[in-house]
Length: 340
Image 1 (tube, rainbow, N blue to C red):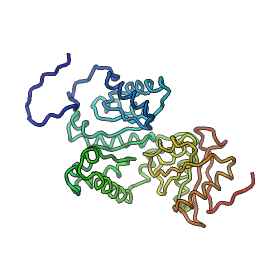
Image 2 (spheres, one colour; image 1 turned 60 degrees about the vertical axis):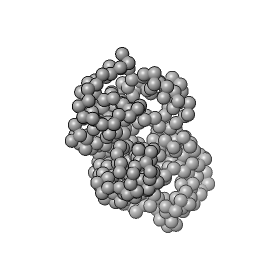
Image 3 (cartoon, rainbow, N blue to C red; image 1 turned 45 degrees about the horizontal axis):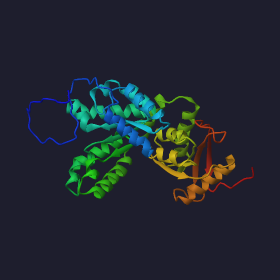
Image 4 (spheres, one colour; image 1 turned 90 degrees about the vertical axis):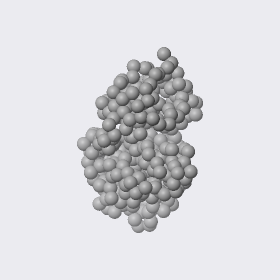
């Protein structure tokens, strides 16, 4: 059938091209509808870095999308939007299958009793922190700024609470897509986020990650953050080919910027949502000494550190091997270039 007969119990505006929700009723429709497949094809054609996948019901839906892209030799980062009651029931598996998640509070508040949304937001963020996945908090964060040049105090508080919960990123929707004050909304959100970060309990969030982190790679990343705090380093330098080194370090919520140095621009773009990350694209160095010298110069040129201050560097050895973070070094700036 291509029709749905409804009875109006509470009147209001109905707009075109909007989703229809039936809380408490699980959909039996295949996730890859004709419309969804068409949208995914367009994403593959444009070679986007991230694909937000809506109305995910289970980890199986995420794997279906990943397989769809893999068949086209396309491997974007998949951000699963958590907006269905079914998704909350399979939350851990969905997060494990995705590259990141979005707390899509608008539709989630339709699917669940609205009083459960704040607790659901915290649950999603904590789980993502635990396994080191990106988490975005979105929907109606600055809703009043669609029509007003200033936000409500409650909206600014909402932004702060999302940051304090441990979210990696916050997102505007209607405020910038159709609002009258997109620049003001963006700058106000950024200002509120920066103030909230000053109050963040970084150790609490790092402890969430420690409970889910295993292996040498994670141990080195954790040590880099702790060392930066103890030696008063101004920056953490993460040399990476795949992005994994920077992802691991960011998961432990460092109190200083993580400057990622990578030869791959696509890898750099893929790290845009990570906590505290600044990306510098540079040629691959030929030796470890050259790498540290390059990192020292980047730290100084960026203005994040000054002469005689310190930086902490993390890399994988041998150079160019993906996924191995196994070396940490404290650098007194500038680090002189040495012979190979």
